[in-house]
Length: 345
Image 1 (cartoon, rainbow, N blue to C red):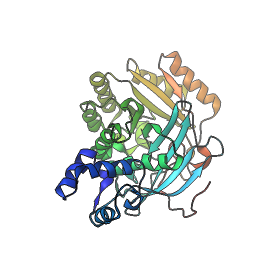
Image 2 (cartoon, helix red, strand yellow):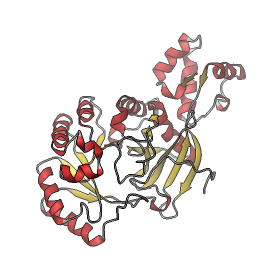
Image 3 (cartoon, rainbow, N blue to C red):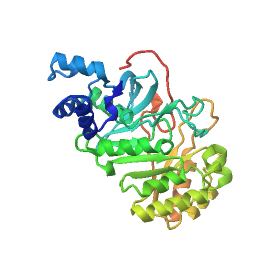
């Protein structure tokens, strides 16, 4: 059966007309889906006969909440969502002064193999559809009863490894008929697949692009990020410069500080030299420790020195505020889970 969450409104109208249904019914059904309906029985303004007909032809396919955890520190929520095929994914809801921000997944599993990330080791299962990516936001909005105003595609998976579905997702949530989230309130994070970064530069979609850099040399980066073997630092930075030139938008360079690995003053100086003159912001992330990686969180003294070194080199820099660390919801901590503890309040 067709999963209606994967359609935009115009496509759904066309589908209904082809199947002998009136197009205004598509608008009604679409509104229910965007507002969190998980099945046709919730669509109370449709007749019982019509609901039965819809059940015989389609499925809604909105992800269902399998379980959730709420941080006692900052009220961050980590959700484990169940997809229509039974696969589980994770996403996170964070509260800031400017509103609610959702961190969503783009794949079931990941094949990039970054050694500091909890998603590594669970294997790649499949890409998420554009609708399934939208569905994560819909499910969280329905649960909390508030509008989500900002979205980061920074959960499980590599968005650029699921490029076509990523672009479809971006266009869907930006549309007024869907979630109506402005492109400038959407961020996409990539480990650095250069050909896809160049494709994105031609899309005319003014989102915020983040690059998971994490090291300034090929020797260092290849040890923690296998993608660097085919997308070297020089190649990646050339691609970023082309992206900046074409889009006129600043890039965020994410840099996870790992104790004793990439946190020295000399490493900071090398990083500053690599980024000199580039329209970018370095977002430093004291790494969140993950069992089995062996990587340790940087100490405060080294963090302060690293930041000061970049500031002295006139590199714009910020230190990320980490949320949800007590429920393993912070950067790098998400993984596909199979817990069966129900809802944790």
